[in-house]
Image (tube, rainbow, N blue to C red; front, side, top):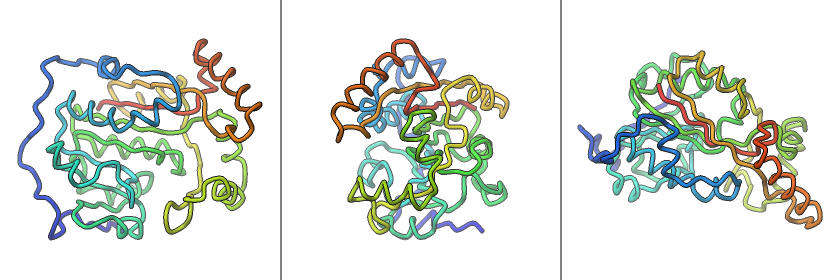
Length: 272
């Protein structure tokens, strides 16, 4: 069942036209847009620069109707930042409870990006730009999620999805371990990961790859352009310096040789 609260009393009005002026350069490809970011294929760069990447893509592609998939209680942008961007932003989540925690004033849309497509019907073709961070690894059917995302995008619409990837060892373990046991490990390592502050959701890693399997699947859905930016390394072994040093050495080797099976994160960009 679809639950929406898209126009609450204190939410900003829907904008009637674009308020973001496009850049003077015509970026004909996602690769060219990525080139403006000065990407470093390191996990820390990915974490520190995702918000900047979303802003840059919004500007480069002159997007005005945005949706954050799985934004829930913790959207990437606050209300003032949305106003500064001059865009119409919708925050999506599968859980009404998560959206209820969201501060007043946001446009909200409650649906499962990987579920039945019928609840998404009223949003079909509504968005110029969709983005999400650390969400698509939690869906049970990644192919359906990407298919539904395709339907949400307007013609020429762009999406930028930030995910952890297989087969980085910590994510393989998270994938294989029972959900309750994996959640206990995360909560033990990160004290802020509580049900009230930052819940731990089961991870499925469906289609969380960076190799040709992913690009072929996305092209088959109908995306006319696909660009996968890989990142290497992670910080999960910092508490054990000797192992962390080995991990850094291996991540550097994987980066230099473009060993895609050993990426740890990715920005996955598509264009309808």
